[in-house]
Image (cartoon, rainbow, N blue to C red):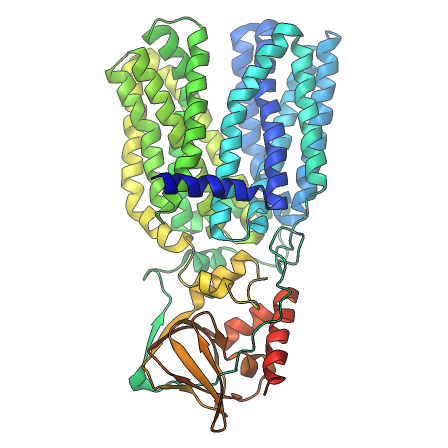
Length: 594
């Protein structure tokens, strides 16, 4: 158990050793902490200016406007430079909140403060999809992608705890305008950190500094292989995780659009991509169901503390703090669970665990039960957020990822608004405790019903078999994570009996091979010129130079190889500068040694 916990903690630490991911998370930490402090300040300002009704109306306007704007602004993440979009959004929000600070300081019109709050919310809808979409470009392998999302979730949970606390201190020693100014400074901090971010090219992966540098050590010579296996000695296993159509094929159809589209058509692509993929539909649908509970929590947290438990106003803060504590613990739990290889199913369990504690509070209206429920909800929330984002980042093509996240954000905001409106109605019509049972019970049933499809998502979303074997090769290591995963999914497994000829000198070359088990001998003419064991590769010369096989390769022991076809291997290697250079070194090294 200690080792299971140590590895996730090490993974989070490693995220900050990646310069790109470190900067993204540092920027997020600053702006999120400021946002939470600002949320407290703007709510108090609205309450002082117009009472509870004004607070509610401002919240609804911000929710609705964000839900409408998100699909539109998220299009920028797919059309432009994501780093510039994030920096630009930070600078715009800095200006808006700075202006609001001045208005509050001089006791100016409240409408200007509300307008700044709404516009800042709208600007945020461009920042978040760009941030979610840039993380896969910065991550160097699947585990780091998950760890990066865990780090972001941990930071958000910590910000939800620190932001209000900082706001409380600043309100006690200064005033509202100081809290506003604090938020403005955090946006400036975020922009400054992101300005130095180096991002790999989305298509080629040429970088940036986000990925590991190409190896400077000369590669070991690897012979080129050639050919057809003897049928009696060879078992070929296609690398197919499931017998259903992969989500990538579904998304490829979804992206088959005319070359020239209107902006609205382009902006709606995120919704259409989600709708056309059953896997994305279930993930976004279940996530939205969980967010209904999140919206309801804005109401029932206060109602539970003041009405059900009969406690004072300070108890609301205690329950919110318990939620934040659960979130920080949940981040580590999410990484531990990620080792099980069931991201989507754990996401479903997380949604179930989000809703089930409401049944506990309804059954046991005691403070201890409410505290336990809030910690569990916070823990589950971290698992849900981390897994949902990781699954989508692994399923969705880069060219539409920003819009998919924008569409999802729109759906989540809408679901949250529904929850915040539905809970008061349930309290008025059936009462608080039955209302908790209805909301919690319905979402639990949705999570259970979605489990079969979530199992299917796991078969597609997780790192495919053979990824580590391909990534260990010097010529393939520079390729972006997405390209490596695509290669691994298209690979096939071959088994050769001892003594079998894998291919012969002069054969036509059609596949590239990586040895996963066993040992092979490489011969030119009748002379053996080398041997290769697990981790070695062969067959690249015939494919890259378009020549017949230059050597004969024979299995000395039972051999297990993973292979890539010529039409998959050649475009991937030759289309990427770093991989092409490494491959040329390998080929030149081998040809120069014979």
